Length: 531
Image (cartoon, rainbow, N blue to C red; front, side, top):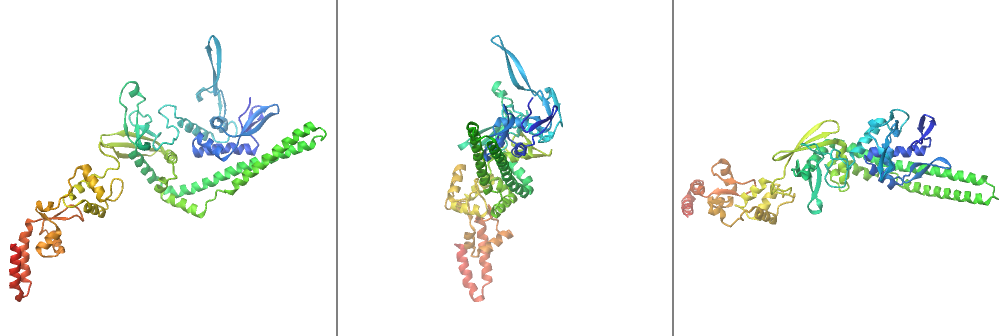
């Protein structure tokens, strides 16, 4: 029986790694990339993008030999799923099935069997490309990436904006939550549990359903809070990974060039040994030699192209990368960070997230990879509320200020207090007007405070004949019982308190004047107080 690519027989019952260094490093590269990407498809795309060829065994008239082909998805999946690369010998992983169709026996091959049903499994049988523990970890990742294997697996990372698709589970039935998108360009994310499709089959209600924007933001904030101390280390690791990718690609190109030169030299030696008079053989060997020389030239050009980019970061790029590592939230929200990247980061640190609903909150239980657990509570959306709605205290503040100021003055007051709209913008007269109209708050009318028997600070200062600072001092002392909606808002002073204070200020002012001016000042103040 044949052995897998990357191994050769050494005895009738023993196998070993292929002595070809290029074959060994090409196979090892597949396992290293799967440990990095954790996705067969991503490994396949990377190998295709970098132009890395994979070895394949061909048995023909010349015997068993290695050919190099462009990688395909099924080949990579078979390599990652074969226990021989984990140092184990297995037999009976597949079986045949016999059926009867139209009165004739039909045998179908290649039906996979569970590991417990294998005929033979011998661990540590030979030297593998990875350890058995790593092989089992790879099988769990492959099984967890399957999108059509029920609601108990996370599924592969997809392109949608829902960050928690896969690890998020229902706290009632334990199944994976489904994701749906709505709104303009599908920006609104919603998670729902279909309870094993019972609501479709039997008309029952789904377990839970809730909006995903706030939940995604809360989990992202918690993950960034815990990962922030590791940001600089992650940036340095990213730089090392980028350089290692170039090294791996260059190494594969160097090995391919070495083999191409060997094959060209072999073709030359074969051509030199043939009798020149035998033109039929000489012509064929010359054509093979020319093909090998063309392959050498192609590999030299490919290696030269890789050599232009050594993978080293410039000083500016390294400084930028370290700054992003120090400020992990900025790197998280960077335009270059895709949704797939964020999802992979979450899956690296989170095992699963269990969600349950209360009357007004979404309770989340974060299960970290290390075994720890964290509880988060997120407020549920209420009818008529959305993520851009202004806070309730701002609404009440505008309602109170609208009884004292016009819209432009209200906007200035809110900006001085550092208040912002629901979208984080500063307040303007138009935005205050729109907010009033939406919440049905009446506009301020000129003279409205006077109708309620209230005066402003300027009016009180003019009536008492003192400075505004004196009026403020009287307010702080409690002599005047005035009200202020917020800091910077107009003072509402009861007009009834000013009459008695006005007479007191008339007498006090008169006593403080010289004798020759008292009589005239008293008469003037009496006339003003009477008026």
